Amino acid sequence: ANSLATVTITGAGGQIGYALLFRIASGQLLGPDTAVRLRLLEIPQGLRSAEGAALELQDSAFPLLQSVDVTDDAAGAFDGANVGLLVGSRPRGPGMERGDLLAANGAIFAPQGAAINAGAADDIRIVVVGNPANTNAFIASAHAPDVPRERFTALTRLDHNRALGQLSEALHAPVSQLRDVSIWGNHSATQFPDIAHATAGGRPVVELLEEQLGADAAREWIRDVFIPRVARRGAEIIEVRGSSSVASAASATIDHVRDWVSGTTHGWTSAALPSDGSYGVPDGLVSSFPVQSIDGQWRIVQGLELGAFARERIDASVAELIEEREAVKALGLL
Ligand code: NDP
Image (cartoon, rainbow, N blue to C red; front, top):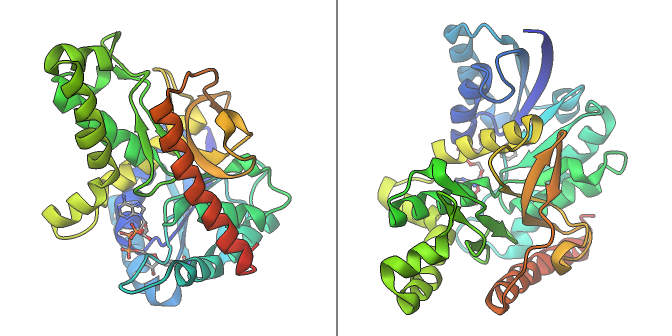
């Protein structure tokens, strides 16, 4: 290895953490030339589980793995960090109001933002996985005034990959031939999976669907089957598997950071990042966009034409993000 990176994972003792750690240590996040130092951040109740994972990392004898630290101290965990995977969060419990949810997560992501501000490396890249991911990223960024806001992103790559999986099945086309699917808005049921610009083997996906199903049925499939299935796939996984998606969430997290660091090569992907006002999304709101990664930075794909349906769906998801932001402000979490 000719370089060394420090990767901090919060909630590292949880399910997604367990699926992530071994892929990072094997070099799938940062490539075969970068040795990694892992920092596993947990709350006190999660420390034993994270320590157990650390023992198994030792037993895997990964040549690229330089060290593993387990801690419940955010300042120490983010000191010198190059990459932060913010997985640990407070998911919505039964009967939990949105205000309670946002307050609980504010108490997690505000101090983590401050710790990142105080000690992370200059090239820090953050991806928030823990829900409500977009708003958690917004909170963390607000508490890290010295870190450029575009370093704080949230994961919509799982939604993106889910969309690819559904299209692949419907078109009998390998995922490797699919390009330019977009996820817009919030990582929630209001997200807008958009295939208006997508291609399969170079041909517009919408045209292929129309050929296969007829124009009306294609439109219905997109609206009534594809979009809700992608947006509610998490619930479907829970129903079938008996617990929430773990390996696919970890895999998407790896994809997100790998592409951010190494670049996108085949068309675009999707990531939630602070808006620069593109497509009418209010400046600073952490929203998902079609993006390319160039020279280590996400760039929002510009100049896409949005039809009336797309505009309406994006506006609805953005409205939800604005509501979350206002609720967070009202709670004094910014
Ligand atoms: P998981 O590892 O399964 O999930 C972690 C978070 O990821 C959840 O909040 C979950 O939110 C979110 N998530 C985002 N996308 C997905 C997806 N597609 N599928 C499933 N989850 C998704 O949860 P565990 O309970 O196993 O582990 C969480 C760990 O975090 C615990 O060990 C806990 O101790 C720790 N924690 C650490 C904190 C810290 O370091 N400061 C703070 C809080 C918790 P959702 O359920 O809404 O999908």
